Image (cartoon, rainbow, N blue to C red; front, side, top):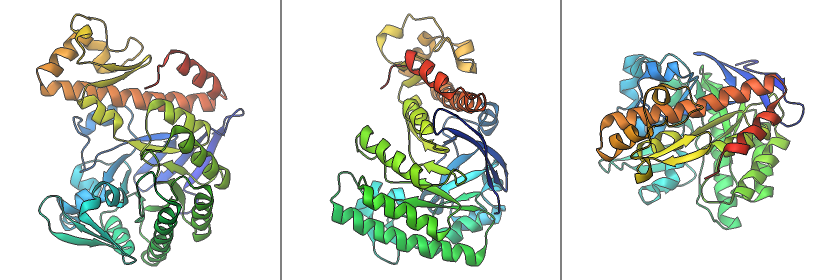
Length: 372
């Protein structure tokens, strides 16, 4: 897709930028956070509620929707948007994360990845070409190629081998993508663990191949924050501003703000939804573990600075009551709040970049927020 990404504003005192990404299902204003709907649904949230809090794009997991309901079923429905009833943009990851998370059920070689289903044990093969074809068939807006994700720490030799496999897969993926010309945008994924020379090689090769966006993969898997941000900074120094950069699987609010400072455009993470369900709620002063007994008689709002439905109508004491009694309403109200909190931060980030005041926003945020 020609001219699908445009830089709208730049902050004069950082690398932060505001952009517009055009997809087949609408425009996305960046920086953007993408809630994770692994199996075609955001746990605890209806689509109308996702729209009400300003969700621009969601993420689905190709591995999981391949198992259930299956690519064929989604195609029969008319595509992923029709099947799940979501008419805004969708990004699908490629299954690369499952190479690490389901490592005992995986065999990898130059052809691709043979998975053994964690549900029924059936084997199936993901190849660079089949991953692109599946995403094309279900009419995904932002597509990801197959990549080889490894654990941290890893030896240099293992990281280099994984990168070589990834680059081979990605060359095959973009060649196939250019052959079939689907409507979705294809990003390349960098790998190389925390080894800077490998990261440089990875990023430069993907730019040479002509990917329309660059995703930074292989981070937030156990490395230190310093290592993570060194790789982010290194990658952004190589990638031109007019190519969007997606930081995969990150992260905490404070990490997102620091990554925007370095010029990152797109984020996804399970933290706001998963943590909500397990009692970890975000506020402008930091996290709250709602199950703690100290909140049993706390009748104040969850976050006095938040204007979401949960904070405007319910107390910390009530949310704790719902949590300890295992009421399903707890997951709904807490997830609504956490996602609102994340998306509201992104809205304020975009606004501050437009006003050339991102640094002031960042300083004000960290004055109150206690990092976790």
